[in-house]
Length: 222
Length: 252
Image 1 (cartoon, each protein chain N blue to C red):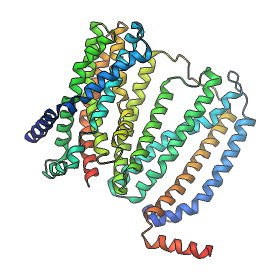
Image 2 (image 1 turned 180 degrees about the horizontal axis):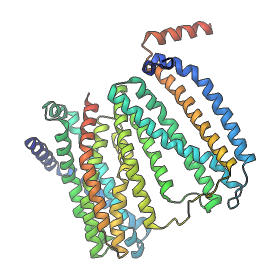
Image 3 (image 1 turned 90 degrees about the vertical axis):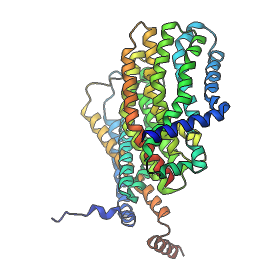
Image 4 (image 1 turned 120 degrees about the horizontal axis):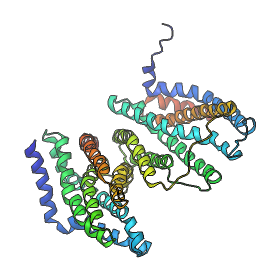
């Protein structure tokens, strides 16, 4: 089980390394999308500071959805996904390994880039830390939920737009509590309650999403 | 016992087709009569509200529609799950037939809510917890419809839709409570949603009549849609061919 996990996980990382420009696209999207907001709403520091957590979180969400489209598509197209499922290891470990690889390749860079973008939007040091931590707790949720959408829409013509429609409503709790943590700090309160709920969301998703992903893969490959 | 109808009989599409066809005219009649009675009660008999004037009367459409939107989502998820778990074709078809009606009721609830909000609160829309979660419910419906329509293979479409509906049903309470918390944190919409605490009995009567009218309408239209889906999916079977031959003979 563990061997299969590492094999798939490391394979996905290696594949991404070989196509590193492609792997960097979500993070580039993230940076470009965030930097559009000041141009759209105006450069007033007060407005930007207030909107910063929402902007960063929303763009992180969209970047995750954008990249999750390709999570299973390549393996599905060349048939290796079917072979992996045929190994008898079950879809569960594949689902977990793939989601973990997606998080490492997309979620983690988003977390690392977030303080920089927060700084651009005028957040202070404490808020930056909270924003980063909230994303650290929240991005795995996005990867897991996105994987459900990716597995459901495997091989469909309009998979990209569909995933967004299917998954974004489900990510609303993560968005609310992620941005809420920063808002709490900005308002002089403790963000601990938000961390707890984000952590609970993460645990809940980590327990329920992999079986759903595995079932979706079985449905799609039947 | 005399009343031991074998309900499983109707899980066969052909039998369901017959039963639904027999019931649909009655359901339409019930919907029309109940709606006429409910609207009459609501618009002419029920007293004018002390605070909101006559604008409150939209409640007789708004509230039943909002109730239906939630009930239908659960029914849809339930039937889809049954269809997936037991490979019951009819259950999957029912789930597919329920989705557009549920989406319609959700839209009606949002639309009438906006029409009500303008005179009552002075704005078409507030990011209130209930309004926001109703909007998200509409997105969930649209996602289900889009996914099932995008997949050409019917069996896969049914199962994928079932999985999505179940995931949605599990998430609805989480989304609802997080939206509520978000709303209380932001304090932006400080308009109180509490309706008139005491309802005149005629108002309640009208509301109940309209609720039953919505139920009848939902059953009628869902059965009709389900019948159409049955014909479409069972077009290769003998009984459907027989049916089309008979109807051709009639028109000739």
